[in-house]
Image 1 (cartoon, rainbow, N blue to C red):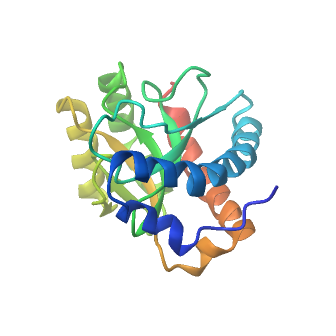
Image 2: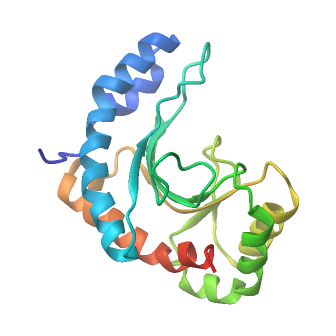
Length: 205
């Protein structure tokens, strides 16, 4: 099977009321696409990193009342999970698609990674294209264009604030024609991930 892109009903999933109803739509509309995307991208990352990578589709299993406002597929070197490790994401909100290299609050070695990022801050900045954005909370849509100040503040908050996170990558509005072309979208994800790989590798130094 091939990925044919995201369509309006995928984004409209997040307008459905009720946990069970929305989860059913996520499972029927979006997760099959994540399975196809995951199969293609995990091969790309495994080859690029010369290390086995694994697909993790968000199941939202801990939710008992409130339906999820976004959903994603993640890629990690750990077969059992991704949240405690640096990982890549492809995901959807109701109005956008996001591509992240994600370091979230559950990382046990946040401070050590932040220290490495501080040491290589200029190198990281020089590698980041001007259309990349930075988020400090994976539960919010908000993201900032990356300049030197935003990067420095992001690294410092990641280090000193327990719940602060560090997610870097790109976002695409739901009406972007790129999202409707499966092949073009996969190539774009690979391009973005390729630019993020040096930062990913830094986290393991």
